[in-house]
Structure formats: C-alpha cells, structure tokens
Amino acid sequence: MRKIVLYVLSFLLSLSLVSSSLALQVLEPEYQPKVIHPGDDVDLWIKVANDNYEDNTKIENLVVKVKPHYPFELKQVNPIKGKVIINELNPGEPYTCYFKLHVNEGAKSGNYRIDVIVSYDLVEYSNGEEVSRYHYNFSKIYYLPVYGIADFEVNGLKNLTPGKTENVTISIKNVGTGVAKQVNVYIGYTLNAQKVGEESKEVSMYGVTESQSKDILLPIPIPQNSPITPIGKTKFYLDYLKSGDKKEINILFHTSPNLVEGSYPIPVVITWIDEDGVKRAEQMVLGLYVKGDISLDISNVITDPKEIKPGTTYARIDVTITNNGHAEAKNVKLKLETSYPFKDSWSNCNIKDVGNLMPGAFKVASFYIDVDKYAKAGTYKVPIKISYMDTEDHKFVTTKYIEIYIKPKPLFKILTQNVSVLAGKENNVYVKIKNIGNEKAVRVKVSAIKNSGQPFDYPVKSDTIGTLYPNQTGVAHIVIKPDADATSKPYYITLEIRCAGDSDEGDDNVYVYQEPLKVVVNNSNSKGYEILLGIIAVIAIVLIVGYVFRRKNSRDKE
Image (cartoon, rainbow, N blue to C red; front, side, top):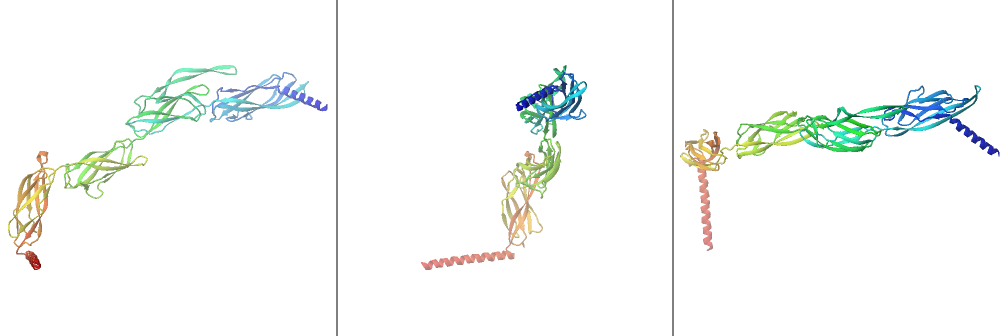
C-alpha cells in the first residue's frame, strides 16, 4: 500500500514539473538572411515567453544559451558570448534574445544543427512573499538550412601556336560548395554592361515583406578580329555540376600570326541556377598561353667568286639565317657539312656560332670551301646543320639545305704517258690530250715551258689544236731537242694548255692549265747509256746461249 502511495505522489510531482515547464515557451528561431550562404553573418532571434498567466508566479534568472555546431560559430554581440540573461519575466511577458552566427566559408549545402539551452527559476509569491521556487532547464534542437554557392575554375590544357587553328580542351570545375544547375558556358563572351531585364522576389521577416531585385545581364561574343578567336561552337550546356565535379569541353581557337609568346586572356561567361533558385552569371578569364614557335630559315645565298667552277679554292659562301618564328632562339650554331666534290678550306672554318636570334632577327654567316678540280657541272645540295635552344633551354637540331651551282668549264687530261727522245737531236713529239670537262674548249693551245734546270730546248714549243668538245681528243706537235751531253734518264717537263671558254654559253674566260709530261732521254755517249747497252748485250748473250743449249739437248735426245 505504501508503495502505491509513493508511485502516485511521484506521478503527481512529475505532472507538476511538466506543467510548470510549460510556463516558459521557446518559439521557432527567426534568422536573417533568409537564404544562408557560406561566409554569411547570420542574425538569429530566439523568442521566449512566460505563458503562465497566474499573477502570483514569475520566471526569474532566465538564461538562454545557443550552442552552434559546424559550420556555425558564435560572434560576440552579448556581454557573454552566446548567452542572454533575463532577470525576470512576468506572466504573459515575451522576450526576444539576439545572437549572431558566422557560417564557415567552406560549408556545403545542408541543414546544420544549433542547440538552444534554457534554464530558469519558476517562483510563486503570496502577499509579496516567496512561497516556492523551482529550477528548470531544458534544451531544444533546431536546424538551419545553408545553401552552398557554386564557384567555377576554368583551365585550358594546351599551348597555342601563332598563325594556327588548334583544338583546346577546356575543363570547368565547380570549386564552390553548392550544386550548380542548368549550367551554360559561353567561350569568348563577355557580360553586357547594360541589363536586359530584371528579376525580383519577395522576402518576409517578422511580418514585413520587401522586394529584392536583380539585374539580368546578357552574354555577348567578343569581336572576330581578336588576337585569339574561338571558331565554331562556342556555347555549351553542362546540365548540373556538384561541388568538386569537373567537365571538359573541346573548342577550336585561331591564333593571330602576329602574336608573340605570352599569356592571353579569353573571357568566359558561365550562367547557372544556385540551390536557392537564384539565377547567376559570372564572367571569368581563361588564360591561354601562346608558345611562340621557332622557325629558322636559310636564305640569300651569295658566293665569292660569283661563279664557282671545278678547282675553285677558298670559295666564300655567305648565308642569311632568319628567325621567322615567334620565340627567341638561343645559342644558335651553324655547321656546313661538306662532302665530295666539296671540302673545308681549312679546319673548323665551317662552324659558326650565331648567338641568340629574336623573332624576326637575322644574321649572316660565312663559310669557305674548295671544289675538286674534276667535279662535274651541276647543282649540288649542301646541308647546313642548325642547333639551338628554346626559351626553356630545350635543345633542338634541324638541317637546312643550300644549293651550290658548279658551272662547267674545260678540263684536260694528257693521254700520252711518256715520250722517248735522243740527245743532241730534234725530236718530233706528239702529245694527245682529251677535254674531260663539261664545256667546249675554244682555241686550245699546247706549249712546252722551258725550265733552265733541264737539258732541253724547244725549237717548236707550241701547237694550236683548235676546238675540243667535251670528251673529244686532239694532238699537239712540239719539237724537243735535248742537249748532246744530256744524261740518259726520265725527265718531267711542264706543258701549258691554254684555251678560251664557250662564249655561246656566256663563258668568256681564258683557262690555263699546267700538266707534266714524262720525257725519257737516250744518249749513246753518256755513261748511263753505255751501261744500258752493256746490260742489253749481256741479256742478249744469255738469251742466245740459252737457245743454243736447248737446241743441242734436243738433238742429243734424238
């Protein structure tokens, strides 16, 4: 029985506590702005009221505290941050508590929790005297919506080259905290400075309604003569992008041929609808890098002499190297690589250090070559190896070719290998020559050049052959008279071959060649000649004895 009484008493006490706690009413929080975004400062009002209308009761020592959770944090607006103290509330009296919150800039869209903690004393008076005092505390949980804001990052993934139309992959990434819906991307557009319309919405707060308006701006394309111009499709619909999502689009860009290396801004307009339903438009800048190409070309080939022919030595070749690109070429070096019928006139004469070449700049380099005397006429391609570095010190090697024309000219070869002459006598000598060149030789004349150190006189020292066409032969007649005491041995005399070029081909040059001819002198009075005759006699005797001996042996066998 006693237990039953205790249960009843405790139940009645609990009812009393519940009914007493209803003496304080906590209303739903009000906040401003009504649409909360990351980074906002939020005004928060929490209204409390003493709904106990009995005249003999009061609420005293009322404390209202706010405990926020991420992404909210309290700001100081009360003597004690996050706490409001009310000394007393009479029956039916309300009180509005004011707090201020800050939303973390990185907050994503969602409903975030705040706790409201209340403590107070419920005091009953009778005839001005306190009869009873009960202390109560409780907490309520509320959720405030935060709407993340979409933000975009635009990047181009390729370098452009002046004068070319190239495909560029562009990435659009939502680096904001909210979802962007109905995303449209306009490449090469700007936002018109003049509004084309206006949208408005009604915002209510504590019974007061106000209209908020926003201008509508229209994307317009940039001029077609811009340094970098988008070609073809320039508008793209991406639907929606969540926070952190990325999508890629491809677009053609034409780069002006006159651009120098550097970064160039391209305007991009993105329109979308945020999670709070607000239409937004933002003009951004896409940075495209124009990497100037290096184009080194060889031109203006000048030779000295102007006409290069077989046998030419120390021929100078001047070439102009020009940077026709749009970026600086560093440490430019040229090497003329010679091969037959050319060779370097001296060691390392054909390696040239040009230095640096800015876009549009040029320099002249000189090379020196010798031409083989038997070179055939015609046009020869000679390589020039070019090595250089770009602005990032990457090394490159390329080869260009120049054309060198070898003009034809007469060239002679003595076909007569040697001649024999008798000392002390006039010897008729016939010398056969051949035009092994590529041009007709006119007025060909062969002359013997007297050398005071040789025992020869030339009663007839020259002879004119006339005209010799390429591969044609001719014979010249000269007379050689060795001294009577000339030693029997071979001598080498010098023959001069002189001719004129083919005037019909514009060649008015006179060509002079000197070639050796072997002349064997036989002198019966010279010691050398006697020795030679003795050797011949001995050889003859040996041959005769051998012949007789073989004949005798053959008869004995018979």
